[in-house]
Length: 292
Ligand SMILES: Nc1ncnc2c1ncn2[C@@H]1O[C@H](COP(=O)(O)OP(=O)(O)OP(=O)(O)O)[C@@H](O)[C@H]1O
Ligand SMILES: [Mg+2]
Figure (cartoon, helix red, strand yellow):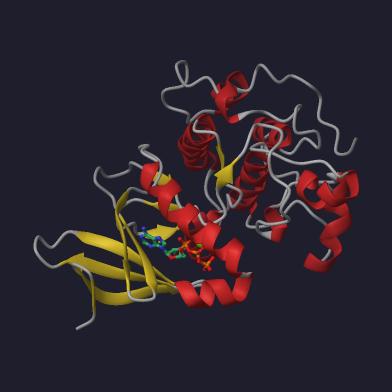
């Protein structure tokens, strides 16, 4: 029986770049949890001493301070020997696995997903943080409590850092298919990028959850110039409203792109209908242009 602090490991859920996520249970009261263990030495060796140290402690510090109904709750952080440990509330699966196993979401479920995760992103941004790795693998579905109620939560703050809306970051990082143009262009423009990269990444995620595809042409190695120019293409089988919503998230210019806090949550308690989506982004009426 393997223990990390008070937590007994039951099985392995995922083996990632930096460490493992285990299904675990707290021995004293049987609370279930997802135990993420990150070997400190390996993280340092892989990414250089300074960077990995910052990233590792950022993840623990930022995630444990985030409290929001659509962010996976951090139950405990601690170190055991060479491992930094993060215990999270146990979720059922990540959304990418769900899409790969069961196919694309319906538009109604995708809007619940959108409403919940955008509210989480708005909260993260209000804390002065850019997540920088918004994608379906990092959105989890909560165990079903009420039948037919979908609950999604954002997780994985491994790349999160302090940032402003449009500036503050320079590091080329994220997941290639989800990176915003300003991230790939940051070196050539000698500028910086900010929290708005999360809205681009969410736009790609929403596209993927609905189509099981990406808005680029060709193979992954062909994407770079398309991303740099913000050249995205849309399938015909999505409703006009959905296209409009995604297009506002995939605007090349970060200051024209819809902001997480521009969704009107007071008026959209139940974000399940397409007309409400249009209403939600009504402050951004600019016609979509795929490139500057
Ligand atoms: N709270 C959780 N409940 C259930 N499964 C989880 C939980 N957290 C993470 N997982 C599973 O572990 C995977 C990796 O977790 P996470 O995204 O936090 O780590 P990572 O740093 O991205 O690892 P990787 O190197 O694979 O990118 C998730 O995609 C999910 O399948
Ligand atoms: Mg992840």
